[in-house]
Length: 116
Image 1 (tube, rainbow, N blue to C red):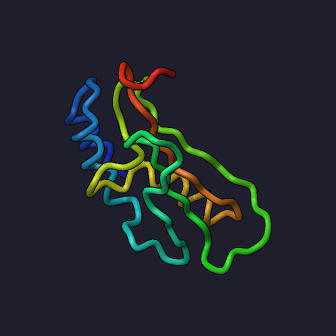
Image 2 (image 1 turned 90 degrees about the horizontal axis):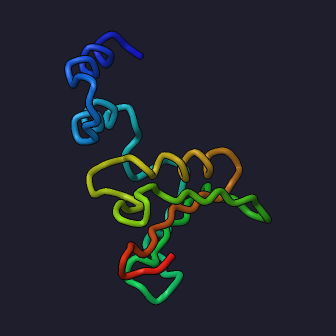
Image 3 (image 1 turned 30 degrees about the horizontal axis):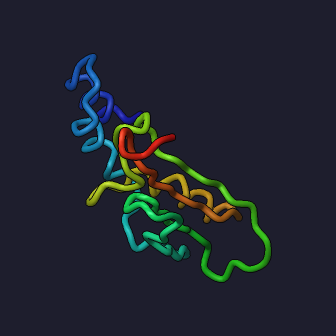
């Protein structure tokens, strides 16, 4: 951790503040378009509006590849596979695509409308 990042994190204090923490770390992540990676966004996998996924593949990748599936947290009460304007959560399937896998990022139905 660089000294300026450490200083900014310390300034937030001992609290959980995703917005402030995200603002510190977002500049360290690449932004779309990601070089060498193709993304198919919002592929439907079920009938609910939130049954969507993104598939990340390396350009020119062929043949059979392992798949890494990332499911965001949120305890079935919140969250999404991505947040507009934020690079977070793309970083997991992006890493997968750049390392010989297919990366999949999933959004799921939330409680109480969706039973788990």
